[in-house]
Image (cartoon, one colour):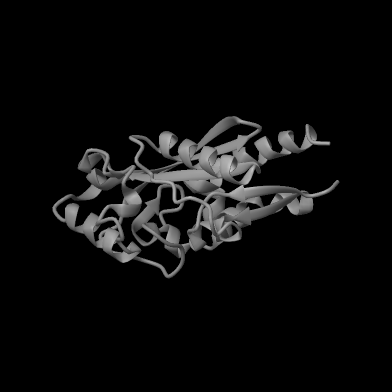
Length: 204
């Protein structure tokens, strides 16, 4: 079978590494491209009110621009004690061009007086597969809590302060393989692999 091309609709290097690892079981049946392969690709403004809206917008836009099937995700960290924030604004919680560290600092400051079980949190990922002018959507979730301070050297984003309920370790304390088994994005990508396997079967 000739490998089919699929565009990952992101320029985030850390996210690309994680997604490529999660989709590696597909082997050579799919050739994964990214927006670096399309320098003229539009910057899609993530102005949707939901993760679903943003992921769908990105996937549709990149599918339309490249003419190739596209995969896009949007991820949010939901903290009930903060009325669901950072939520859909997670990547820019501390500002439009905020660094990972700045977002983490703002989150810890916002939770400074919050203790124990009130520091509960959930990561959510929505992944949209756009192909042949239609979209398919899957979701992944991971329950946990926010640490009092960063722990671990791995991962990216809020990984150093998100303690997964299943392991009681932060994502930054896990290997990528461990994280992909239980994380929000990892779980969504397990469902994506099924979508892509079905898509490959319908492709000559």
